Image 1 (cartoon, rainbow, N blue to C red):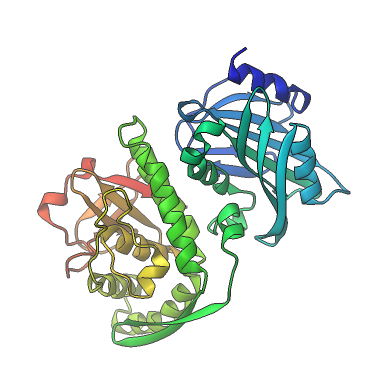
Image 2 (cartoon, one colour):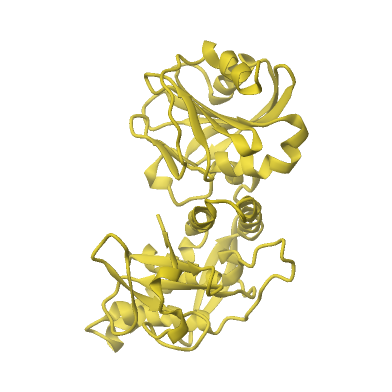
Length: 391
């Protein structure tokens, strides 16, 4: 009996499987129970229950299994639900509880004992429907677990169960790095000192997230899904960063937007966007010395003065603009070894045409002291830019 057949057979007592089809995973979602995952590319949907209460996915290149189980329970706590699901698999586990996005959740490391040992991570948390819970288990062969543990954590950490908290740190990162209280920082933008805060945990947490997602990205270096992997890498960083620097975004807006309206009443948005662009253009330049680590400086670290490069700056500007409702994109290019921001503000200059739509975004160069719409002539081939749609 093959490993996959053995696992499928073992899960039959949990799920009533129905059908078979493959999935090139970007966003894996269930509209009925209103949850989604931004999975690493290449997962396949092996089986699922007819009523949508269970899924079995596999990432065959690494022999990783992903189990999703929906439970309706009026009486049990989240740790009891997680323990029940793990017990049915003859799993040895250690379970802890914590608060994630206003809901008490349970988390576990475990080892399933079938024909051999399969260690992994699992969580249980509440869905939006009353008394409805999702349990997620991801695991692989014992001999490869240490190599692929970050991939497993990244998979589970991409879970979303409530759109109100979509752009917030994921469930495992939130458990590993709980809030510690405010850390004061001071920004200087357009000769205006802006006092704001991040959480004391944000620097370490965001660095861990970047390092984890870079280790996932590195697995796709010679893979057919390398472009999609790059897009997911930046989406994951964006989602983790959004609420971490939300206070800074609010304080920047409060201090500068009225000034922008006074200086350019006809187009305050582009004036405000220029404040942000000029600010990041003056940051200290930094790239990683180690080719095995990411060049990306986490956004909380950018705010505290850590050196950075084009992608950190571009994502920061895009995020701050999106926080005030101005649609923005991140553009990355392998050929140009560069990243830029693009924003949907009407202004003169070089524009990026979003494929499949009639929407136009003006380019923003973050490493040269220029205005929106001014870019190097060598960078104007739009076919060489990969667009990252930010959620």
